[in-house]
Image (cartoon, rainbow over all chains, first blue to last red; front, side, top):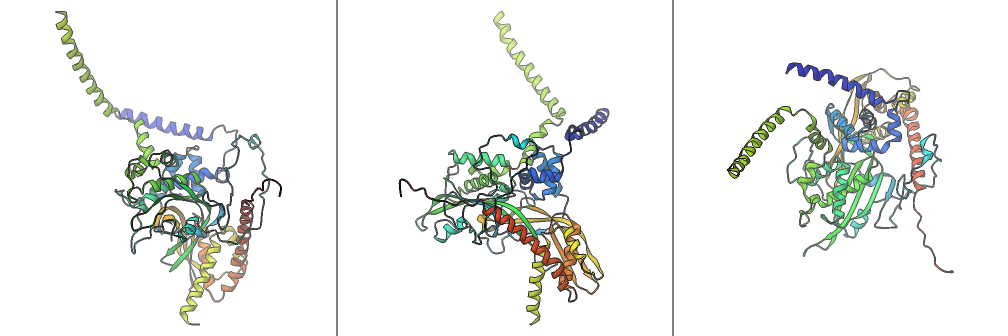
Length: 366
Length: 154
């Protein structure tokens, strides 16, 4: 057995050397830099930061390079890195209402205060491959216009003024904020934990779950009340300093989904809401997150929870792609002993089966 | 001015300076600081990197929840004259954290407060405002101007 382990070690070492070469590819082709990844594959970086649950563009770019562009592997690397640093504390909650908006659209109101701002978007492109991008493409400088000084209030705040939409749940005094990186997940989970789980959840999984609600598995009739992307300032109450210290700004995408009404004998009917928030420009992610957040509120809103997207334990236990890939991919690791015992059992069963079937044939022959 | 109000106004000033410095590069801060004959100072706390959990609010304005972490670098610097400055910034640039801490100490100093505002903070603020204005102008050009098509002859 010992000999086999030694042999494995050498093979592993050489496999990693081969991986390093495969990662680099043809060395006559220039090496990709972290700046190039961060600047030109920005949305991949955003996704790795969101699902890696760590805002650091440079580290996310390094992870993408190391993972040869495998984003789930990159997310895994980022998650592992965050475990190596001490945590100073938690920031003040960011104010998305004060966002320096670079994109902001609403599908519910044409004339929202502050306007519909398209920003840098794939929307309305023709999705035709562009051969001019293949090499040496220099884009035309962006157009500019007089920026308005008008505020861009959240669409949900506008609806909220007339009581047409439920208000956001406020924290109870002294309530702590749930953190699933610190405490194991228990069910039922509160909305803070659910949103944390969804914010770091796999985009593909959330997209499928959100899509399933639209197709009728937990229908809740959504409108994209507002999607906004831009920069928000972050502040951290540093005890040694004695006040909330500005740390700089981060880019966020926020989605406010406006959903079908609720009401009761004592409460006038109003729209309900689902919420999505993620690092960077992550529109598909935040829209899916908002759909799933709303679906997971089924019990709270007195809806029959029958669809997968409404099942909190199902969604929250399967949304994390690092956990999921760990369990799926562990199947390729040696299971020799497990398999030997299964094989032994199967041989025994087959022998019994053969013997049992041999008897009647013998009888029939007689 | 009583001491409480004085504290408040100094705190406002320190915070405003930090809000500018956090957006600048270490190199830019160092270059601007080069214009000042710096007083003796030492690291009160060696720069260190860590994490801050970033929080959002349910619906944007409700109860807080944990969104995900960010890397943060921090440092503390003391001037020989006694002022203690703190530096906190997103990212892992510990030299930047140290320079912010140094600036924060200088902002509080009777002798250097004015110079650091004039030679470091003000020009960096101006540069930041120019960058933000440019982004705002590029963004504004993508704002939709709806108009109604009039059918038939007016």
